[in-house]
Image (cartoon, rainbow, N blue to C red; front, side, top):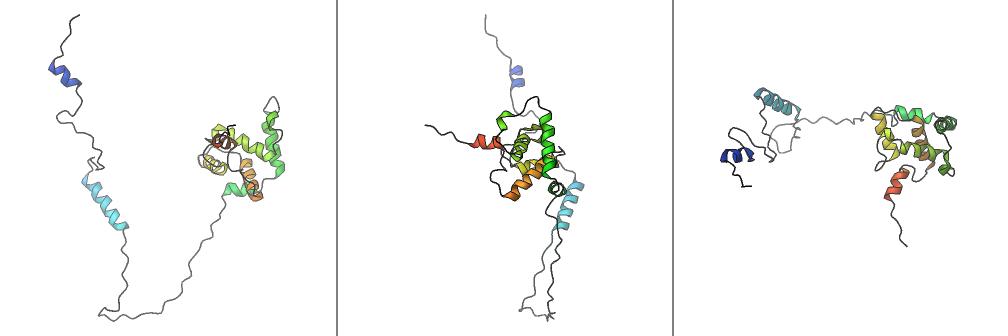
Length: 193
């Protein structure tokens, strides 16, 4: 079969690059989008309005007479901000009996008991169940408390009992309760013999 030649017009159509009248993309950081003049002016006026220039105190070398008034001590107004959110206040009121009933309800959904979790206390069982509940987002690389609050902010309605367990463990001073068990396994290094 003989080779075919391409015409110059066909090769021009397939060639990349700007065509007459078409602009190119620039990655120099300069904004090239056309903005109407009235929007530019409004943006610059609001930027000027937001900028405040601090007043320079009068120096002793100034020729003008400055009458100094005695300075009064001003007490800063401090608003008492509640450190705990509404959810945390609710979680503090949850009793151990409520946490046990929450766990029993979860266990009822299963066909067989969790044999591999026999040696764990109730708090760790609840927290591990929260770790593997994917509807609240990934658990690796984030603490359990942050994950719970993120799920709350996103409207995913994480169980308040989990927050109660986290707060109780924090008050006890327990170690490694913040890190998900899966995260600990993923970050572990294997010891070679």
